[in-house]
Length: 333
Length: 268
Image (cartoon, rainbow over all chains, first blue to last red; front, side, top):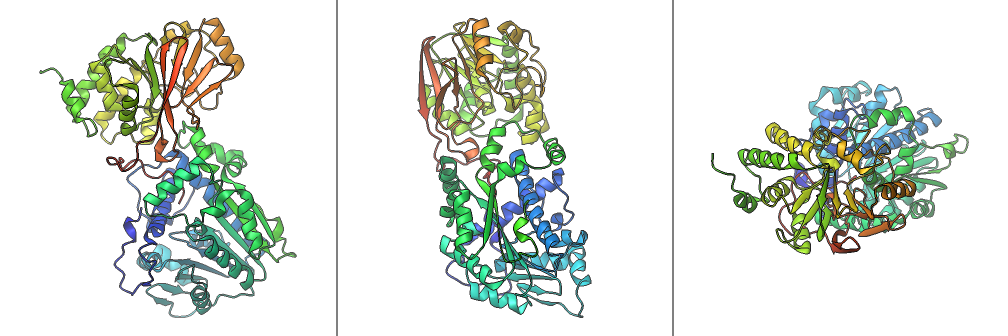
């Protein structure tokens, strides 16, 4: 899964000792993107932008994978929209480890853009995304339209504009992260939503705790959305860890993924006031019937147990701090 | 035309059979399968297993159970196709193949079983003819999946027209039906059976007795999709009253190439 991370970067990439170790993690961007693109191509959800960022996989993805990504994208999107509504878009969004995510463009289409939308990922991935954005008017135009000055700030792995910024940085290096965000006019006074979708599990518990603490201390009013593994203590979990390790992808933070309780706890211990967590099977089972009927008729799934088992090992968590008058605590998927 | 050399086919297994050989293999199997009843009789001693498309694990299974032709085998569906087609052609009275849910046309369309349209057509011809159940010594029924509610007797199973695509509803099975104690009890009682032996359920225990000893769930595909890490078992029936589960583990990945289609079925 790490095949596309060997980019020929013209800029000097971070030459940290972890660079080759991170290849497996960078490879997960490819995998997730391909799966999302594939699901979109079958009709699971609407996304006119992803095809410009991600190629279509020749290999069919299994129905349970498509359904699982649907639930993931749906759940995260619901939480994002709830936050935008509560803050009336007078807010910021930081998508950390965003990969080839297309939320910015979709929100613009829906008239739901925050004051500014930031994406952060490894420099190699950002460079690739930037290259694609620059070459596709469909992606580039919306950014330019919203920009007020003549020239966008753009170099190898940063693009900064009035409403959108994309930054190449290592999420484990918080001083670098903060510095780069500030250079792109991140406003700590605005209610801010941070999103990590399969990101924290790839760093150590200490590193993710620091990131959560940094976020909690940087913004007085904030929300954090985290999607990743849970219930990993069982055989399924052990096999997943082993399988991914063989693909050079180390789930360094899997210890936190023991249970919904441990997931909530780590949020509360690191500066967040209120935390919720739900396993994806439960989320799936509470999706609106009409939506479920629609997606379940797209592909026949014979092994329902496989879907259940898979989904029970992933969770959607969210935490808030401040924002009492905004009613952030009431947000749910 | 020269006879299809089955031994040569066996030697080639693990790599793709050339299309012409596959066609002839499917034809020989079709001829044989036409003779099979929906409820194929079998006699002890016999080994039951089911395998979900993993060739290497199948080899391991044979290692555990003892390679044919000295042993009898009943395989419930979802198998690595070419290997078992060859075995069935070579030792038709030693190997019974029961239809699983992965063979139906719809499912193979979904899972992209074969890239080549011809190969897919030959295989679906075989699939349509695969029998549904096996009956060991008239007392143990082997079937994959669940008993549909409208089937109450073995004769009803026998009269199903199996030579067509498996429907979603109706006979054979449906996702979401569960075996209830009452249904099993009734079926076992009405048909003078001792046991129903079924698969089609992911279990982490190797062989799960449930429903008051009238049903055993046998799961033989370890590491389903290389993601679940099951220990699998087959069940050896020495006679109607004596069964012995034999365990085997997933073949470690250091072995030959995992086919590219089986990528990590996780969310990353």
